[in-house]
Length: 245
View 1: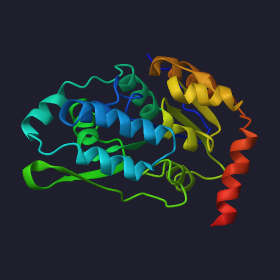
View 2 (view 1 turned 90 degrees about the horizontal axis):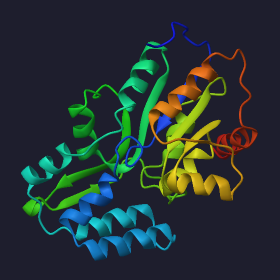
View 3 (view 1 turned 180 degrees about the horizontal axis):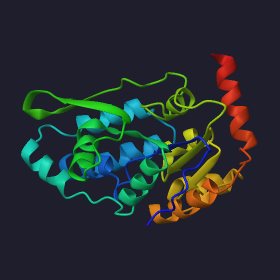
């Protein structure tokens, strides 16, 4: 049962997908399952070590798959589990008129199917795209890339800047390496795994979480406040982007 109070604060929530909404990193698991596992791990390590961009990472990963049986792949996707507390979290946000968007450096094919099979198709998401060529070989494309921001093939930072205003209180929820850039532009960060380590190493304030139940408890408490102090460093970084534009 959710509280009746609808917050007067304009929250905008941005959420990673792989490993945050899902229990596993679907993109990584896809290439370990259908590509060359050893090569895939080497490519991912090069990306984490900043030796290649995210666009190059996806292009090289897709090259490890010579052909793909889409029926088997769809079955693989259907067995992906999400954090079950995500659905109550979405329901709370809907009831409280809180806008949320999914920002993923993954692929639209599996994201749309996972959302649909969990009754969450109405959630807007931004991601990389994939089509299938000869023998259903995956071919990635990048409709939201930013050459000045190579960490993500889908520039999450730009979605945050374009999808919020100075009046909004921004929240980022993530877990991985591709979340370290966009999280810096948000007022509140919920972090685990690699993102948590990054926040600790860089002295960025954050809330640790394991499931969306943890996030929801904090969000309810924040919603009760009349005024919220925004994170100063996030405001400065957003201002820098506005000035560059």
